Amino acid sequence: MLITSHSPVMLFGMPNAGELMILLLIIVVLFGGKKIPELARGLGKGIREFNEAKDGIKSEIENGIKDKDKIQSGNNTPNNS
Image (cartoon, rainbow, N blue to C red; front, side):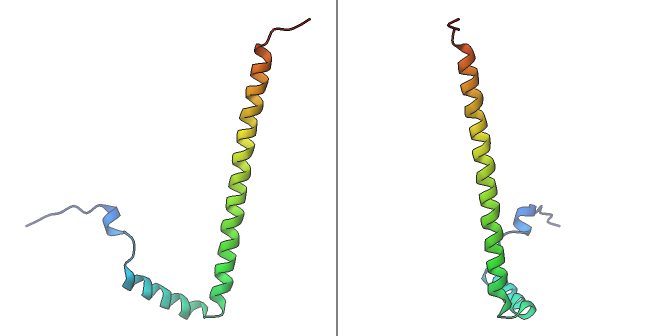
């Protein structure tokens, strides 16, 4: 008896062309041809908003780090009083 171990990655890998065609057919049947562009537009808008929010948070963090460095470098200079 041959026992092999399968990794979860191999069991649930990327779908092949046949599986993608079946998924596409199911989507067309469920949503109809007119609804698919609307769904894609909504998905694209959501992805765009997510990326804008991600970039905004990233820039805020970078600006905070720069401000902190400026404050710390200002505290290291001798006072002229």
